[in-house]
Length: 588
Image (cartoon, rainbow, N blue to C red; front, top):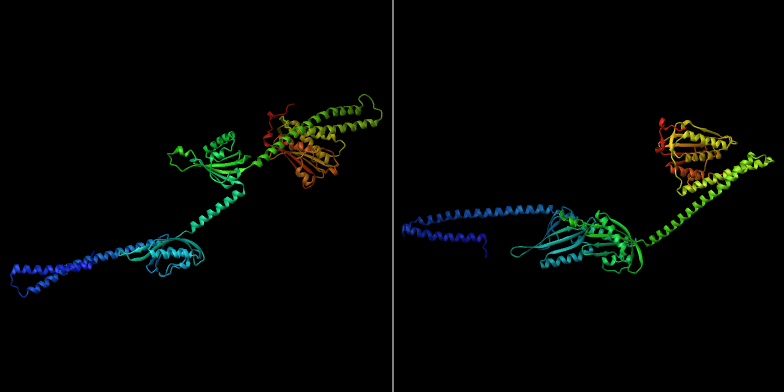
């Protein structure tokens, strides 16, 4: 049994006194003999007191110094504990043996929302605990304190401001050396953020499952290490497999051998570049029905050390999605067949138009030629002058029909892709002049003034002369046809940022908005409604012009200026312009 400091001092003092009395008597007897003077007793007492006082002084100094050190160390320890408790990210509390709280750190006040000026005392704030968790948390605390066990419980508290906080509360018993239970020291950790994150993950997983189930998209996850395969519920439904675990060989066996080899090659090529893969595969599902699936996926590479280059090249998992595209595949097949049939019909139509156009040209040439002979009375007079007029009408009608046949033939050639340009350096002003003279010769009875602006002089371009002449004749012919007598047609040319522009402007009635937006985009579309037409024509002129401009890389623009009339502009791209110079002089 270990003695206390006071007991040890008393025993030492008694032992020292006894030794002094016996030792002093023996020493005096030896020195002075049995004779004792009267002063011997007091001297012994004084000496004893002095010696014991010195020894007691030394002992007390040591004891007091030790107590001072212990007091100082205890104060330092308490200061350190208080500083650490104040800085701790968790709430800390002390509970005495009576269940009263003797200490709360600032963090605990922050968690519970209690005021900072709250004095120690009172039991744990059981009234803060959520009503659904109160009974469980308090019952567990009572059991732990009665048995002296560790307490750990997770519950919710409702702060005074109304906010609900999730708390993990843990406490351990504190026992004195003598075995006396002094109370509990505990901590409280705010788990609200973790609970909110877990709830967000749960909701996100729920949304993900609902979205995949509703969108008919299955999810698959293939672990390459052990060849295990995870299929979502929707994926199992798509391939008609029962719920449960399935090996990868079971699913791969649904893919035809040739398609499986092709898919593996494509996937390996993408994985070498660490890119996602995307492919369409036919599969014979578990119910024996063949279906098409759109498979998307990507690799997941493990985090390895830099020296493990071999492992770094291979992914540890492949994961992706699976979607049934059987209906789309069947629709694509039907569309492909319909497209093929349409192309064949279009080719048949084009071949028919080309054949009929050539067949019509031969009799038309005979009609036009013989009507000219009759009109000119080449082999003698025809007798009645009316026959000559009729012959002229036949010639004019034949020429008109021939133009229509030529237009149809040109459209057929363009639709068949057989119209090829023969580019040459052309003089824009010369071509405009030729087209104007030809239009004027065909409209001698019309009182329409055709003027050409000087902007075309000196302009040259690399174009197909025949195509350019056809463009100009169509534009001028339409302008003259829709311009009333006394009107004016103007031809202009200029260089714009978009390229070389040729414009034909007339003073006719203009074009409606609907026809203006679609003119030239569809064959047989005319500027006048069919029920109120006053001018002839097939509606192929501007369509042919637009196609010829597209072949040249240019564009067609139809406008109705504010003052009335119509302005049609063709724009050739800048790369077809040819700068003027002696080397580009036109041949004679």
